[in-house]
Each structure stands twice: as structure tokens, then as C-alpha cells.
Image (cartoon, rainbow, N blue to C red; front, side, top):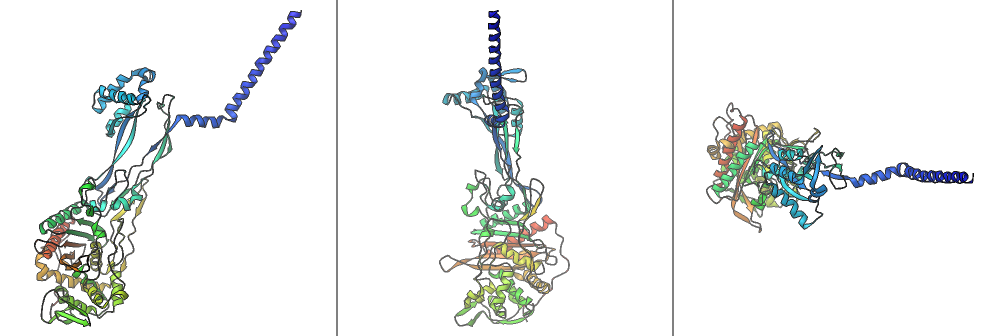
Length: 590
């Protein structure tokens, strides 16, 4: 009886112990799963989850017709974890099939065009240097086809990463406008830099879970933040015409032994820059091969005195103010001394000549232009100059666009007040000069020059570029009169015989401009230009050609000859219909 009581007591004690242990485990389980469960799960996930940044693809740059000018070529680096090739004696499973590391080396080698022992050597070398090595390159910069074949092998310790290379398939064509990126992918020049916000995307983030031995767990990849690729930037540049005008600039620079040559082709109605050609522009694929001064666009950064091409601005102001007509008479001497200590002359000696205003423009008389221009006060003339875009930076879409030099009228000394009437004491970029002639050809309405059509974001949203507001500069009547005068200039013996294009009426003005020598004086050589538009009866395109400081031949002939070749190229390219009718012949003298 006593033994029975002892057994019952022992049973109760054992039950008590079991119940107590059960309660302890139960409390602990509740603590782990309920109280601290979320925190522990997050901590565990943090140890298993591996974040991976997914870089955004830089957007492409295309020309006005959608032809690719710059694109990002996505390639892929292949790497492996040397230490994980040894896990479980190098055996891993694809489904129910066991595979050895040696078999995997052979499979990888077949895809990348190497020998199995070469792949194995990568692993052995890495482990010899560091027994815990977790990274070694197998092959860098493989294409998408190779990447997909390697992924299909299903080798757990083989990993991949994207590598982006910026490619410019047309070489130096429009290189001065496109610009380039650095080795780190950061924009350095051109629209690559100024339109970086359009072209740059936003990287994404993905995570995957890995096992204790560091191998990625199948099906565990999660997109935490989707990648947003860069947008597509469309320029106004026409690739084919850009190429052709660049060829002309290179040829004439070499032939004339000029310091530089530039050309700008601009749409009269829209202000779109169809071509901005500079001699030996940078090749964005090989920036180091270009002269440092050629790695930016000189068309926007290099202002120079326009010389006689600017006389049209003075004539425009006079016509708009009703001070002259194309046949206004002016007896013009060779030299003129309008005020004490103010003296200037024409570039050629002549007797006092009874020229009309048109004759003064045809013969490019500094004296005649100044005599007529002095009918307007300096403030009025200054206002017309700024309205034509002088002294103000263009906003075409480049990183920096020079405003040129135009002092306020109250700062002009007596000599400068006259000189600016015929293009001295003032400077402009070639793009600003093109805008002057665009305004005249567009019946007096200035349309700001632009390089950018639009930016199309990766989600399809289209953003247009704001280059500024259009505005009227001179009346339509004044513009028509000036157009007639410029067509007379283009039909005079010089430069008419040099620029004549069968079937097409042309209008424009030559310019031979002195330039500063940088030491307070003037150089003895010149910048030679021709600025004009075509067809004169239905203006569609403005073209400005400048040849600087040639050492071989006549610079004026080089400029107008190159202008003619480039105009013919544009006429062919756009299939511009021939002109109709004939120009109004205005007497040169009275």
C-alpha cells in the first residue's frame, strides 16, 4: 500500500515536470512567434536577403529623322564565387540531376569560347590567393545571347552584372553637338551634358535570398524598386546633311589653310538648326584624338566680329523706321570724318559715288552704311540689335551659349557708335548671325534657334524644349524691301558669279571682318563669311559660312564657294522646288 502511494507521488511529480517544461517552451514559442516574431523574421530576412542595384539605361539621342546618334550598348560581366564551387565537394543539383564543378567548368567554357581548364584556373588562382574568395571574373562584356545561354545552364555560383558602354555609331558626325560621356558614364559636353536630365534614368533595386553557403535561392528574386531608364532625346539636326556640311568644312579648311571653318544651316520658319558644322569636330568614341579646342561646339562658344554681314541690321532698322527705301540716294565718299577724332573708310578707294541704299549694300560700303545709319540715334539702333538677338545668349539647348559682345549704347564712344553700324566693335556667334538672316527671311519675325525637338521619357511622356519666344523685329514691309536688296546683292558680279545655282533665286551678304589680335590691336588677316538664304522667292533655309584667317587663296572666294556647295546639298536633300519669277532689279547708282 505504501509503495502504491509512492508511485502515485512520483507520477504526479513527473507530470508536474512535463507540464512545467511544456509551459516554458510554450511561453518561449509565444515570445518567438508572436511577441518578437516580426522583428526576428526581419532580422533573419536581412541576413538572407541580398540587395542588388539595377542600373538605369542611359537614353538614346536621335536626329530629326530618328536616326541614332548616341546609344547605350548594354553588355554583361560574368563572375563566379570560387569558394562556392567547392561546397558539397563541388556537387550541386539542377532538379534531381547532380552536377560536378568540373562539368560546370566545361559547360561555361563551351559557351564563352574557352577551354574547361582555363575556367578552372580562374577558380584555382582566386582560391590560392584567398581561400575564402567569393568573387572572380569569368569573362567581361559578353553580349545578350551569351548571357542568356549562361543563365540557362542554371549554375548557382555563376552570377552576372550589367555594363553600359556609350556608343556613337556615326563617329564625328555632329560630335560637336552631341558631346560625350566620361569613362564613369557621367556627361561631359554637348547635349549629353545639357540634356542630362532627359537622358539619365533612375536605378532600381532587387533582392534575392541566398542559402547559408551564399548560393542564390531559385525563385527568390523580388523587385523592391523598378528601374526607370533614361528618355530619348530627339535633335533638330539632320544626320546626312550634318555629315555633308562637315565634309565641306574639313575640305575648305585644308585647301585654304584656314584656322577654322564653320557653317550653320537653319530652318527659316521654325528656327531649327538642321546642321551645325565645324572643322574636324570631336569623335565622341575617341575624345583624346581631338584637339582640346574642338571638344566643345565653337559655333556656340566662339563669337567673332561679323563684319559686313551685319550691315543688314542697320539697313533693317532704317527701313523699319521709314528713314530710307531701297532706292534712297547717298553721295558716298571713300573716307568720312563725321566728328572730331572719328575717321573711317571703305575697304577700297573710290571717288565720291552716287549710290543708292541698295548700291551701298551691294558694294559693302562702310562709309555709306554709317552715313545712312546716323539718321537713327544710338539707342534706337541698340534696341534693334538686341531685338535681332545680339548681346543675348541663345537657348538652343547646349550647356553654354555665348552672348557675344554688345556694350550698352551709353557706353559707346564716338568711334564705336559708327563702327557698330557695319559690324565692328560688336561680336556674335555664327548661330546668332544665322538668326539675323532667319528673321529677315521670315518676314521680320525672329524665331529663336533650337537644337532640341523633344524628350520622350521611358513612360512615353513627351517634353518639348523652350528656346525662347518668337517676336517681330521689323515690319513685313521692311522685311520685303530688305529681301529685295539682299537678292540684288546676290546677283551682283560679286558674289553672284560665285554662288549662282541654276534655277534658284538666292539672297545674302558677304562679310570680311577684322578681328582682335588679343593684344589691343587687330590682326592683318580676316574672317570671311557669306550669310544668305534660299530660295529667295520662298525662303526655307538660312545658311551661314565662315572661313577664318586663310593662308592660301582668297578667303572670300573660299567662303562663298563652300556656301554654294552646301546650299546645293540642302536643295538636293530636301528636294526644294526651283524658283519662279525673277528678282526686282534695283539700281545701284542714281
